[in-house]
Amino acid sequence: MAGIESKDIHKIVIACDAGMGSSVMLASQVRKQLKGEGVEVVHTPVNSIPGDADVVLCHAGLADRARASAPGVVLVPFQVFIGDPAVTRLIDTIKKGGTVDA
Amino acid sequence: MPETAPLPLDPRAVRLDASAADRDDAIAQCGRVLVEIGAVEPSYVEAMLARERSISTYVGEEVAIPHGTLAAKDVVRHDAICVLRFPGGVDWGGERVTVCVGIAARGDGHVRLLSELAQILMDPDSARALREADEVSEVLSLLQPTQEDQ
Image (cartoon, rainbow over all chains, first blue to last red; front, top):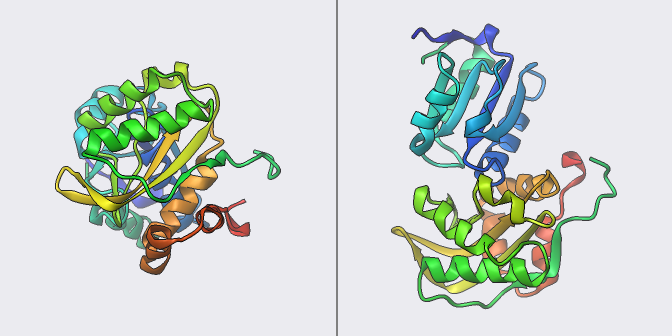
């Protein structure tokens, strides 16, 4: 599927298995870095990704489950919870404008 | 969340000088501490081990954050975290871990603490302070959310 333009990103969902650990930590970081950008950042279990998500961030190991749970939504997988280049790239794109690839 | 909500980090759940044979042992010890402080039912420990086998909870700076699965939320009595330090190090799938932050959550009571932990991990000096703190009170104060987070 196609990517999404940064201006169309209003809600980022960070998904993990239980929504109680790593996703919470990453969400707090992303929220801080996107303060003032008008983007809502939430964390949820991978099986209950809300329908209005514009971009889903999740650990690469959960990517298949996230795709099944939120078909058609741009998915950005990452490997490490702190300082992953994929996450940094997403934040940069939102701040500076551009396309986030699916 | 009201700012006056008590932080779910009980001083009794901070251990500065633990040692573990391996990763599963370290996780089981975290689980037992969460059981001891009344945060979870004993079956939560098995869920923590299962969660770790699916995806590592290693988050960097020698820190791992073991926690249960979605299904195990039912056996969580209240939000809590524990901090166990393993000065001798634990092999965590190839990474060295000296600090385990065990998590039990059914709500969002622990979110401020995790947010603070993320800040600590992004600052190498703070991360070192967490690894090397000599007193339980230092660990508690490092994880104490700053004004900005509240």
